[in-house]
Length: 291
Image (cartoon, rainbow, N blue to C red):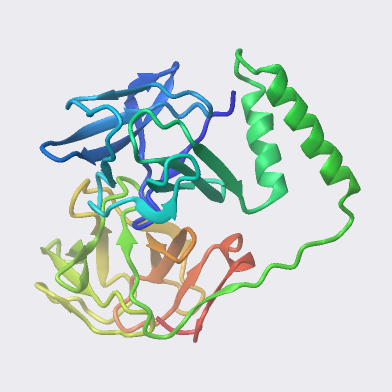
């Protein structure tokens, strides 16, 4: 069977729970709200399995609200179930695509949508490592292979543009906790005098407002470290800024479709920023020569 890794379509944080195992795999954790209770629910991440655990009673044949455990946004969409006309829950595949299932207990209607055929093929390849691959899986796998063999067209996909002034939802690349606070990107900072403070950067693309509780000299290596205020892991990378040769910092930002590795120079006053070469295949930064 296919093992799915899913994330919240609102904040793009992973919903996978390595500590709660169902069908011998990490489960999908969400909050669930019924008429009278709010609790947690863990769904099997194995496609076609309907197993789940919950720490509250889920009333039979009743609809529930499913929420992201990180941003608390409702994951119930406006799409109606073709079987019972209830609302469908929509989650995002890590590889690209969507998984939808009915919000009504006892209704097993669900569907999976892939952005690309090769993504579906990759999932089938990955599932071949599982011991319980069914004949149906093998048949679908074969059909996908044949479709790719016949497909001689190179797909040119339109790149997403992050425009000047776009608000960036930012996250630590290590603990995935949000760095946004009070309309700023907040991080811990240490200057070359070993003074510790808090750094506030504008989360708007190409808006350069910033402030700090300590003095940060505008010179190379004026900053000794920038770290996550939650897990305390450094955000500074070994790579150097191509404009001023200072060290760069690494965070994650959200676009409309994915989490993107985002880099910026640690030297106060330097406006260099960029994304990974891989992300440049699908993302364009408006006015990308400045940060």
